[in-house]
Image (cartoon, rainbow, N blue to C red; front, side, top):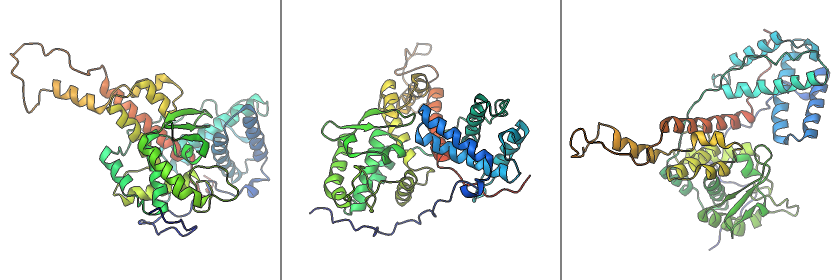
Length: 393
């Protein structure tokens, strides 16, 4: 029997409580800030970015960060670019540092940088356009991004458990299984998954075209046989029921026949992870980390990993993709003195070269995991954390 027809707007109740609706990421409505001259300079800056080819996603992220600053400045009667000095920016930087989220936690370093770096770009443009005489943000002392390891690394068994927990007997579960299979098979980012179109998937060749990924770059990545099978099943049994008369050819559709918002996509995946008993922070990015790590453990080549993840520089990829846990364990078993079974080699005899040994392998692995964690933090900070209306310091 085929999959039952999907019922629009009648999704089954989630097994866990969904997140509350996303709050706005600015501390004041745009209309409230219209009187502030800084808003007009902001609009001109974003127009220039669009003209010279900045991606809409980058412009949107910078827009929210600058709008937050303007709201903060407006509360202190700062209305012109000439009013902003380095001490003012340092004061705003302290405000961000001391800010606490609803759960009492501070903003991560990546989130703080996500609010400060757009200001540096904005004031650099203001200086080049001769709107101000000097750049007050040029010499700001920024926090150092920590080399933190991912807080959660899914094992192969955990990934399979999450995939198998999808109720593929329902249209919703079949759609979710197809999306998770694509995430795990290709390691693409959540906004790249949300932007996939029908013509981007070649099931016959087992290929997926990611258009306008990070850095506004396209890339062609392989799509595994199992992922192809689930996507094909979704197309035949679910998407045909979701498509509307105005079909924009988006691959994965919501129950209203529209494309997914990346934030809503993350919430959906997070609920499924919790339902499968996975408590790690993060959602879609966990599958990206798992994809790269599991392939590395099976000996994937560094240049393939670079192409798969969409990294621009090989030098960056080369640092953290040249080693896998399996090789480290092989080296550890062969060299560490605290072994359960010792060889009968006579004392003093050279053990010979260790299979798979490489210099600084553990450091390289840590850098690899740290880079993926940094990328995940950037993805989270791109969606923003709302700052409430602040009291003047």
